[in-house]
Length: 138
Image 1 (cartoon, rainbow, N blue to C red):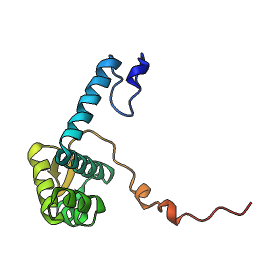
Image 2 (cartoon, one colour):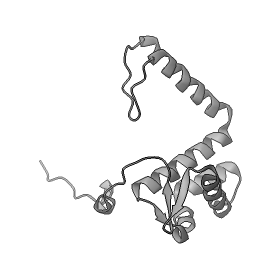
Image 3 (cartoon, one colour):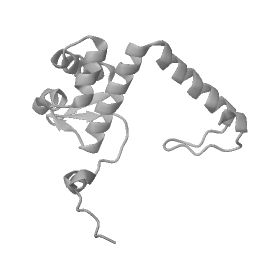
Image 4 (cartoon, rainbow, N blue to C red):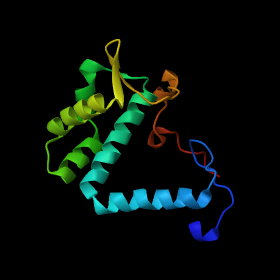
């Protein structure tokens, strides 16, 4: 895409970059860091997924966070890739994100610290596509 020399990039979030070439160079450096450090890439993914879960749910009660994480397939996969047990990874993930300020404890709930708009609770009750009714025959 960088070889197309676009004049404007429209990102999925954040401001429109003023220098598309520099934005591509930064993205390529970031991607190369993930390739060069697979364990770091797994940690990066785990932090992002957990932060997004907190954003979507408008936080999770602190006492429910580790059981929530233990039930996630992505956490089990991350633990396996890192040679860890899921329970230990969950505890370290929460601790590291609290220490870094990426998540905050407020009113007994863990919340993502980044600015975001929570998803309406009713949206979380929508069935997965596999539970949708079959389309009528043609």
